[in-house]
Amino acid sequence: DPGTTADIMQARAIAGGLAEFGIGPARWSAAYDHQAAAVVLRVDTPRGLYALAIPAPGQPFPVRHRGERIGALDCRRTYGTADSYTAAHFAAFLRDRAALDIPGRDACPTPQNMV
Image (cartoon, rainbow, N blue to C red):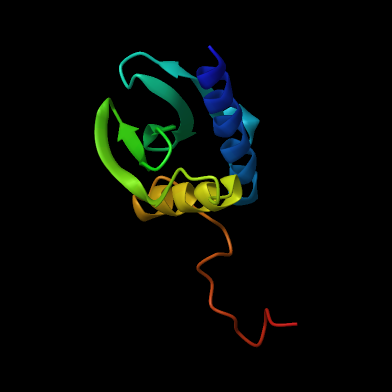
């Protein structure tokens, strides 16, 4: 199915953007999920698997945890939405639920660590 193939490619592109936040290929997978009826990007975190569903164009990206929809990203799937932007929103979503620690992102500069 060409639509599913395109969705898997987008899920992998979003996952590539997660590398900036310490989520490497060993911690994610992308596949069609029959329960969600969509391609999902699953990310393994200390709090379990989180799944980002690839929605129809124009729709927000829903997030599932333990089989339940727990919210959606603050961005929609549009031609103008970069995959790296979606990855940053997904990383922030995980961080806000204590499922992802982003080292150095919350640190305040001090005279010791300023250049």
